[in-house]
Length: 119
Image 1 (cartoon, helix red, strand yellow):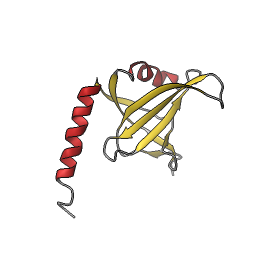
Image 2 (cartoon, rainbow, N blue to C red):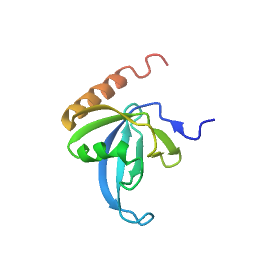
Image 3 (cartoon, rainbow, N blue to C red):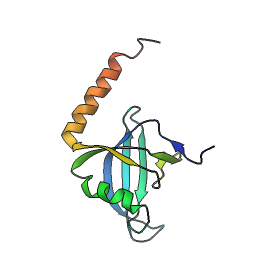
């Protein structure tokens, strides 16, 4: 059995903030996500001092001005929806935030139209 559960959906970044880390000292990034299919909330922490920073540096640099969709995330803690920062993430889309909001709104409204059709 795999140690971490792979998410069955891509996620998009909702917030990316630098915070002080009382646990590790220094500043780290707290990154919040929402699932594209389920709209569930997820989060992770990226530390510029860790080896996995190479996966997150580009993302943290543009997250405040771009809409970013990631795939390949794995859950480290299913109770808190903590994404493992060591996941082999892939950037699926980078568009303007407005364009991503339009794409997601259209996708979610289409899902609502067909709810219950095959129940």
